[in-house]
Length: 325
Image 1 (tube, rainbow, N blue to C red):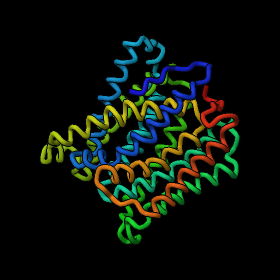
Image 2: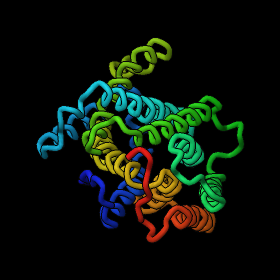
Image 3: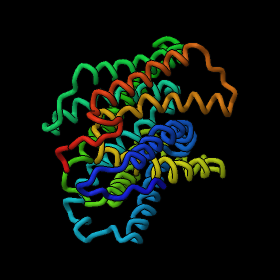
């Protein structure tokens, strides 16, 4: 697990920040396939149990370290955790799990590039002390989206081959993820990022499990799948991978970054994740990488660099103040 302690009023070190970005950039890029495989056995059930397990482990870790305070578990703290968990886990992660059933995983990765558009706009509205996104930030976002389009355009054919419902689900998922990300920076949660993240996972996991019952009644693809298509050993290994790496490492690092970095900078993970997926395909499955891939990589990483330079004042990982602190 990426151990990210509460930094208080001091600025986090460049090494710790770089490790957190590395976790979000690299680990999350490898989770699309895992989510797709696990979701075949009940999307909300498997995701809900994943976050309940990860949240319990993370809270136990925080308790052993002595990071838990009685005030962390107030009604206000649980309300804040429930809002973030609803947006990130149910709308965001749950939406991705549903979309991968009807939309090519590459297109799902493409549509995550919409997240920075929501994130930058919502962050500017909710945290008024932030500088509004300038032309360079919007240029970086445009470069990132253009890079993902170049990378994936040839993979999914014409618009007729794309599920309309899947696209709409991903639009809601990216908006929900952006809303939860911005809300997580507001005051009212636990004092420690680790405790706050554990509470958000527990709340989000509970919401997902609760939502699995009406989803089962409407679509018949949750608990009935658990019974008719039980998960095998390989599926449970993928599920464990999502618990340990996707949640404990990646999600913890993401929440910590939101507390210590500008939202537009954190959102650049949406541009790097598809690159990671392509690289893993090349390494593990010998999938070819052509000129189009290099052009897309240049656009996406160039967009990341532009946003970093636009938002940073001294160094690439310099901390910027946020109103929620």
